[in-house]
Image (spheres, rainbow, N blue to C red):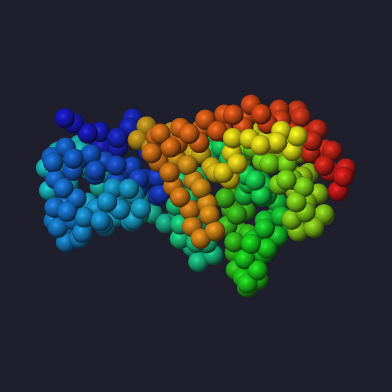
Length: 294
């Protein structure tokens, strides 16, 4: 049995987060190929089996020495297989742009930013706020301030800067497709006041015409629907080794759901929402109507 050095065709895309996941996936395959347990692998690099598990999930940074030792332990001696993995280790340890804001966001959110950066399709359902990638600066500031009223002003501004930095994703060369479905209540809630909400709705009206952005609304008249459990994000990646992933945020943390059967359930809900939600034309009409009411 052979394992592709990168587990896919061509060079890997995305930032360090995705590269760590790809590297971890390859290390897991190599370990399983030779029948080594996580505990034995951990012992070989003076660590625990739980650390090997975190490495294979791409949830921690990699020491090059550890990767070199594990490759030797797994019998990887062919330079054609070994060298790309060592190079991938170096690239996976690069510092991402959002690292400078690490003190302004929860630890569990850093992983999401990295995955978001690497996705080719991001589907979002929101019930309370306009999705972060579509927020105006004023709206983002209001959301952050009201969500954490005890924050110091400079920390609020750093969180706003992180959110605005993430938005560059939608205007970069070769941007991902962003498909958002928002509950009508989101667009009627005067977050930051009427002026801020009006500015946010105008921004959404401008974005409706962007080729990589789809915006739908779940109108009140529809009543109950398939996503009454709350907001969620589904991310799809160009790399064959990265399956679709669901992100669900709660008050003190977040879930990253990877089991195919669970992801499929969220995807099915998203499909039903997209059928029930407004068309792009009706979305623009609804936004225009809301703007007149403000």
